Structures are given as C-alpha cells and as structure tokens.
Length: 137
Image 1 (spheres, rainbow, N blue to C red):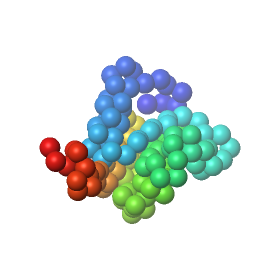
Image 2: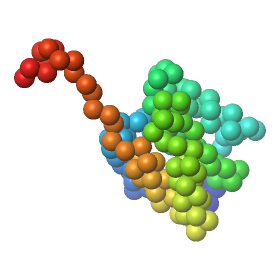
Image 3: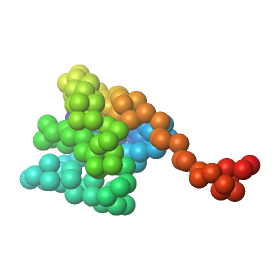
C-alpha cells in the first residue's frame, strides 16, 4: 500500500476483526492508529494512548504506525504492561516490520495484534467472595 492510499473495505474489516479478536481473547482494550503522527510520533502515540485509557488501572494497548515516517510503536498502559512485556511488544514490532517491508501493512498489523493478544493471555477470572449471592448459585 502506497502512502496516502485508503484501505479497501475488506482491509478495514480485516483490521477491525483482528482488533476485536485480540480484545475478546485478552480482555485488554486494543487500538490501532495508522497514519501521520506529526513531528514527534512517540509523543503523539503516548497522547493517543492517554485518550484511549479510562484510568491508570485500565489495560490498553495502542499500535501506532506511520508508514510515511517509517515509524511503528506499541504503547501500553501500566496495567497492560503487566501482561504484555516490552519483550513481547518488541517481537510483535519485529513481526510487523517484516511484513511491512514486503508491502503488507494490513497483514503486519493483524499479525502484531495476534501476537500481543497471545502474549497477554486470557483475562484473570473475577473472584467472587465466599458467601456472596453469585458464589452460592
């Protein structure tokens, strides 16, 4: 995909399905931003993540890709970082950039989402205190 090209409906649908699958699998809020990120792409990615997370304890991950700037970064909230390590984010970034080098932007992001969700694992089960009505059912 050349810089400035829009995604086809099929590509946009593929990205959205992968994002939703990653969220469903992990319980972490995932977002993908593809496009220009201004003069300071790292700062822009941090700000975008800040707008995504509801609070300090909210688990959220942003994949920011700016093809024109040759920039990709995975940014996590502190809560999500407990489940998605820097090493896991680095491996996902490497997989994505390998696909990007072959001209497959959508496939790279889809692969990154899958790897991040796999690294995070399933969400922790919610504990119901003993004696609580839901625990007696």
